[in-house]
Image 1 (tube, rainbow, N blue to C red):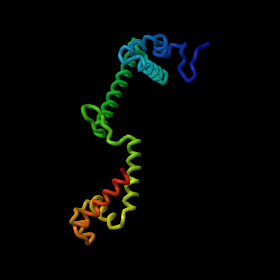
Image 2 (image 1 turned 90 degrees about the vertical axis):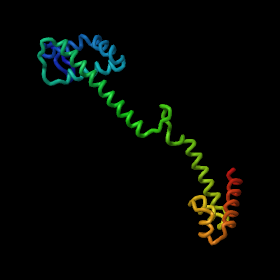
Image 3 (image 1 turned 120 degrees about the vertical axis):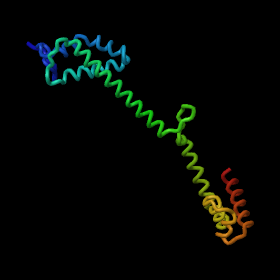
Image 4 (image 1 turned 180 degrees about the vertical axis):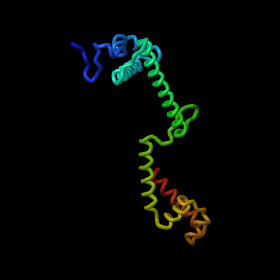
Length: 181
């Protein structure tokens, strides 16, 4: 009676020597991988090697199947290392392009979530406080502080003297400071 694995090759016949050798030397292969890439990656590579061998459709005749097995194992390991290097290079390039760093440390471009929430709340309070200013004071404050007009430009836009605009803005700042702290 022949031994077969579900969805796998027939292991009792001599048709797949590489799988038989793999199964006999799995522990040695794991040590081979672990010495080069670490224990965790070694287990993954051993599994990947088995899947590669078991999923082949053709059998390979080799003068030295053990050497062929180790050649396939080495190629898998090198492919993994190259892939990790490419991934690290991509990550490094992305990090360099997308992040600000000072002294080799990443600096976040955005405030922490709690700081952002506090800033939004403070801005809402400021908007509400400006809305409660008397109309002339509010308009002078908006033109000068929010739209960036000078005192003279604000005075021309409002049809007032520069001194009146200065008084409105000064009063608005006192009121907002008192209200918002």
